[in-house]
Length: 162
Length: 98
Image (tube, rainbow over all chains, first blue to last red; front, side):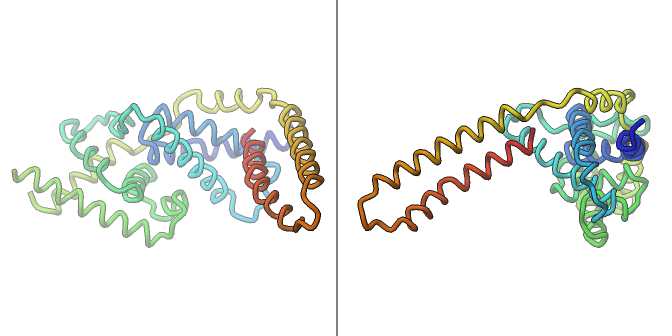
């Protein structure tokens, strides 16, 4: 196997799940996330020979992934027919009665907060990893999460009281 | 319901719904298939771009020849540059997308 192919195999193995999760968080649609994640790895494969290591590999990969997700989001918005359905990501085994409500609350959050919340729970609650993936400082992730959790908790309390 | 309980419920629900998401089965194989597809040749686009640049250059030369004597050619060149630059930028972006 050529060195280039071997390097790509290592990247694919190490990042396929993380890139897929980033796509899920940014696009909220599993099939579009898979399509976009495939496109991201094609771009990585094309760009790998030119990668000089100026930024860390993960920073470079996540930058490609974010750009591809933003492009996919724009394309979807342009031909928007299907509704964003984060609940489609997975049907959880526990507390199925509360899930649609919580997912609806997540869906109502602003983009940054929503992506931070989704990635935080997908990435085993690592602030650093979420910050790296979203390309923002750790402090911003903490602020987004704090606001998102407060806002969702308030909505949930109001709904339960009424 | 108090805030602490609401937050706990949110955390538990999201952990259950989102924890452990991985790429779908067969994802890596599909990516490998895609990257091993033969790359499209860029030759037609490059030849197309050269052709259009030649046409533009020709039009520009003819326009310069038809200018009345004493016309400020520097201004004409600047205007032509402004017209051609965005086209060149879009052309390059298109090539990069291939």
